Length: 321
Image (cartoon, rainbow, N blue to C red; front, side, top):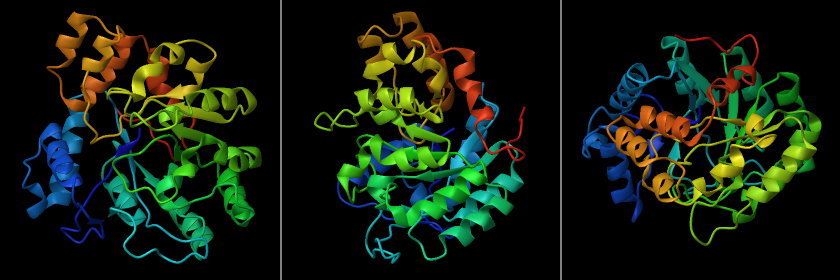
């Protein structure tokens, strides 16, 4: 799970993408890393991206992927913050892909301050959403605000799990850096929402606060809190792997890739988390399979990769071959 959709709007998908400044070479690097040419943005990008993702899934040990929509940035009054955000992926696009391709499970993205937030939530539930995804620090979402209580109550009632970014972020523009703290998730947790803290509150950059200890303590207080190991195969985020392999924390973690974020085993090998032979073997694999195989070599159990099936919205999550 935790696989990003990205689009330029080619083919009428409704997506948009703003790549500026230092993010231009990073975006080109990500494209090459997943096997697309750096000039793909100028063509039928949205179709090419999905076709490549589906090919990588077919060629991997994975049965499917939870694909993520991405809402716009709103202020506290529910108005779109013009010029904020670097990309947008409509819920309809994710839901449409989920209907067309059984290996793609659609996660929608809804800012709770939107005037139509609850209506959009019900519409997405009817459309087959298996999860809700937000980036509080980038979307400008204070999950603890009392004004969002009824929204979280509906999410809990629908048994729709919430995947919320926690910890540092250097790919998407940050609006409020303090909202990277996992403690902002306390209110939806207390209301009864199953929450998955993306990245387990880990750092993305050297100078980011490390919220991993906060996340671990919160798992002891909230039985409905989980974390994902997305982007653990890039430098810095994966430094807590030994703690993640130990119980009781290990049973509260699920596999995530953060595709199309690059996956390398150099950091894991340098830290002694994987052996040299495993590192060399995994370097020959495609990006989704490499992430999976590196984590198996680190010691993550088979249950780490299947646990998500018990958390996705019941009656909608599909077993895929």
